[in-house]
Length: 135
Image 1 (cartoon, rainbow, N blue to C red):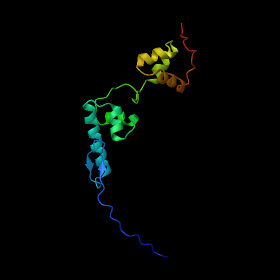
Image 2 (image 1 turned 180 degrees about the vertical axis):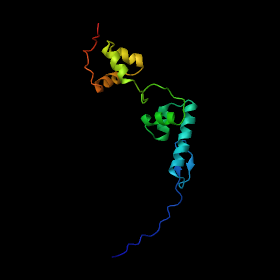
Image 3 (image 1 turned 60 degrees about the horizontal axis):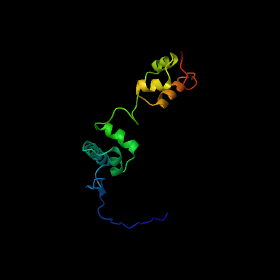
Image 4 (image 1 turned 60 degrees about the vertical axis):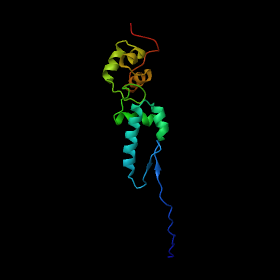
C-alpha cells in the first residue's frame, strides 16, 4: 500500500473573535468560550441591550438567546414567548366544562388562546362552537 505524505503547513496563529471584538486564544476550550460569552450576554442585557441586539451581536437566534439569558441569571420577564408554563390540565378542563370560554381561560391563566385550545384538544375535550358558553 502506498503511503501518502502531506507536507506540514504552518497557518500561523488563528484567533477567535467574540461578538464584542475581544480576541480569544484558539486553544481555549469551547466551553470556556461559551461560559465567557454567556457572562458577557448577561452583562449586556443588564446595561439595557435588547434580546434582539444581543442575539445579533453574538450570532445567535433570538429564540435561543432569551432562554439562554434567563438560564444564566438575567432579569427576564416570567411570561411571554418561549416561557414554559405548566398548567393544571384537570383544572382547566373542569373550568371549560363548567362554562368558561377558551378566551376567558387564557386571560385567567395568563397564556395565549392557542395554549388553552391545544391543551383542551390534547385532553380529548369536545369543543363547543366558538363564542358559545354554557348558560
